[in-house]
Image (cartoon, rainbow, N blue to C red):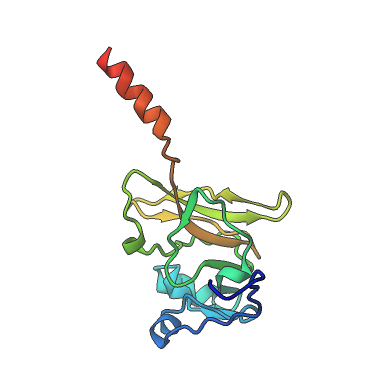
Length: 167
């Protein structure tokens, strides 16, 4: 930058998002809690009727959850993560996945929860029903998201393998 003799420091920057981004529901204010309809997580209407007074699901934005590891790509639909509040014992839920974000078919799709004791994200135990649908049994107060695990690409390893294949 011609004309400046000292380093330029920028503080208190605001970013304005367009209305289309805000309508998608992916951006939340830091302290805002948005309750989500249970129908997004449970297919059976009679189960929803039985538990709707006991269980609440809160959609969380990126600033409301702990940082996710760099080798995991968040592909959760409708929010960055979801928190299940109330008596979740015995219920099975599905975490919505945005299939448009799943472009790498070599990556492994998993569901993660935040373990408060160890202060880290861990893979949730997945159960599969007779129709091939994947479900989890959420812990009360835990935060969940769907993510793709991507193996890092190593250029040196690729060249090494090419060299060995020529020998």
